Each structure stands twice: as C-alpha cells, then as structure tokens.
Length: 459
Ligand code: 4AD
Ligand code: MG
Picture 1 (cartoon, rainbow, N blue to C red):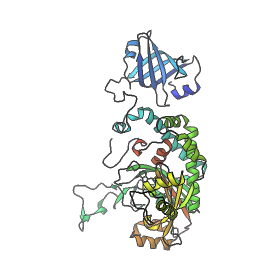
Picture 2: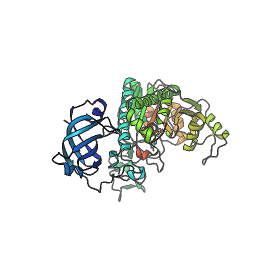
Picture 3: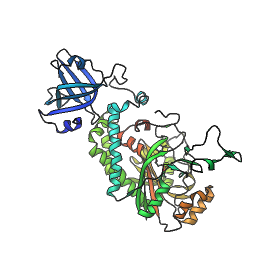
Picture 4: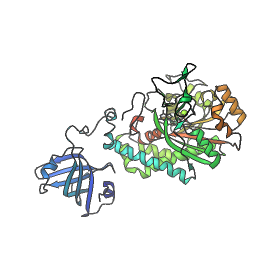
C-alpha cells in the first residue's frame, strides 16, 4: 500500500517502513549516491529519496528523467541536510513510467502563459498543484457551509430553454444539420430540433432555483455555467462554475448578510484548512496574501448605495477609460477603484439603476432602481451578483412587457408569483473569481483546469 507523502511529512517517525509512488521532480546523482525529489500531488513538498550505489538498479536510477513515475520503498530517516525534515533511504526503486528529455517541465520555473499551452501537464507543477488542491477543498467547503446552514442542494438543469440573465449569451444546443437546417418563413425551424424548441446551455440556475426556494425555503445550486460572451479578459471564461443560493422570506439585507457570512467562512476555511498551499501562494504569488485574507475573514463588509458610489467616483479626480455617470454600469476599473481606493476592502454596491439590471430584480419605490447587490473585492472586482426578486406578479409582468421579454415561455416562472409568492432573494458567486481572490492568481485561465475562452477550447 502506498502512503501519501503529505501524511508522512506531517506525522512521520524515525525508522518506519514506507512505500511511495509519484513523479520525479529532480535528480541529482554522484558515483556513490543519487537524490531524487518525488512528488505525489498530496503536498507542495516532495520527499527526498536517497538511493545508494548498492541498489541493484542504481545506474538506471541515476539516469531517470524528470517527470518519470516511480514506486519506492524504504526506511524513513531524519534528513541530515537542511531543507527537509525527513528523507527516505530507499531499499527498492521501480521505474513505472519513464520520461525522456523531451518532457516539457524540465525547468524549475515556467511562465503561466507557457503553462497554459500545456494544460495537460501543468497540474504537475508546484503552483498548479497548490491551486487545484485549494480549488478542490473550497468546492467541498461550499457544500459544508450550506449543509451546516440547512440549505437544500438542488441540481438545476444544464440544458435550458430560458436565458435567465436575458443577455443573449446562450450557447445553442441543437442536433439540427448546421449546413442545412429546416426552414420556416425564412428562419430556422426549431420545432424540428431535438427538444422541439430552441435550447441552450444555462447561463444561471437561478430561475429554477427560485422554484425550489419557494418549496424548501433555503436552497443552493453549484454547477457549471456557460456564457457565449465575446470578452477576452482575465476574469471572464466561457465555461465557469457558479454557486447560487436562494432564500425564501428574505430581503436584500438578508441576502448581503448571507453573502458576507459565506465569503468570510471560505476565507477562514482557506487559511485554516489549506494552510500549506496558502503559504505557498503568499510566498510565490502574492506577498501579503495571508494577511489580506485574514483581514477579510474578520472584517465587516461595507454596504454602499450605487448612487453614492457614482458620486464618489466622480469626486475622486481620477480619469477613467469608461465614463462614470448615474445610469451607466460600473466597469472593472470603477469596481476596483471603489474596493481598492475608496473602501480598502470588500464592498457591496446596492440598489442599481433598473435599466442596467435583469427583469427579475425587485423594483424599489423610487421607480428607478432595483434591489440589486454586487460584492466587489480588491484585485478581482465583482465576485458576487445578486438581488431580491420581484415577487409581485403585476409588477413583474409589467417589467417584462417594458423590456420586451415574452411571458409565454416563462409561464412557469410567473406561476410561482401566482400561488404562495413571497419575498425572496439570492445571489451568484463565481467560483473561479473566488479562487482567484483567495490564491492571488490574476488570470481566470489559471484557476480552472481546462479553460474555455473565445477561440480556445483544447481537448
Ligand atoms: O452577476 P451574474 O451574471 O448574476 C447571475 O447570473 C445571477 N443569476 C445570480 C443570482 O442572483 N443567482 O453572475 C454572478 C457571478 C458574477 O458576480 C461573477 O463572479 C460570475 O458569476 N461570473 C463569471 N465568472 C467567470 N466568467 C464569466 N464570464 C462570468 N460571468 C459571471
Ligand atoms: Mg453581475
């Protein structure tokens, strides 16, 4: 049975027998002895394996390439050299899978740009090892948080007939012959498509989530989300994961309370339960990261009206590339200025102009804003978007009419306002943006295993 290297590094004891399997990170050989650093993905640190010339396979071991897969067996001993507490005095070494000099990860450091071109191999590097361990643990922490708070986990559909955000960013799902689709009155006849109508990949599980909130009270979804948005930025992906809680009998203030509690929980989780990987990011990716996250874990998040945010941006004396004016959406540069320069920490911007927000948001009494909230954080900008929902049928129908949204395909959504409607609210947290925020990584392509962005879909 192989032991995980992390386990032994944490709770090793002198003279115990161990077997490890992993991949070679480096080899240093002399006539008498050969040192191999073996990493099995369980921690940033590998184990130093010491092979002495008495081993029958010594010559082969000295020539083993970086990247090769080995199974080693031996005795754990206190390392006489600095840099590691333990090392393994090898009794046997088996080369399971060789690697020659063409293995691309020979150097100690490679640029993230280069590593993106070999996303099939980058999990074998220290940075991506730490990153994908953090990502995995955070995904589990999300479920733990909602389970501890009695939220029901609902699997909302991935194939859908509704464009929740109404932004027209749906990827089409179709089995029609693209070269020769059936036509009706000069347009494609989607009634002949697989589902008998036009369908796409979901941009959000919210609308279906609302239906479940109106039965179970508190629910959440956590799944892949797709947007055919042609924006090539460091924070947009065409496929990303989103966490969407929805609470019945809740207002915008309750929604912000939940978001704040959730984000702080995840910060604390990363610091406490992923300490080794967080220390790696602090050292190699962003100096001061741990202190920054620790501050957020304990801070109260500022809540600022959209109107105030606009005024303060206008008064800042800063020249922005995009205009700042009441009624216009905030761009990343504005978001970052607010959270980095004005607030110096996470900030909720609430009550946005209704004309820049989706149809389902609850209309405020002023007739020009909706009960929306975005959570902005330093470095990343928007990490959460949410709102209280319009629960009043007449108001909702009127708004859909004004926005030119057809009621008939959303008959089921309107039904939820017909029977047992109640104030309810929810939000969406972009999982990749969260991972960026907690790791200090600056490009969304580097926090998702196989990124999908415009004109890029490898494998
Ligand atoms: O603000 P958004 O579009 O809100 C919704 O989809 C709502 N239906 C959520 C809800 O109320 N249940 O998206 C929510 C979050 C954003 O704040 C951002 O973190 C992330 O999803 N996001 C993206 N992440 C990566 N790439 C993209 N293209 C993203 N678009 C949104
Ligand atoms: Mg948004």
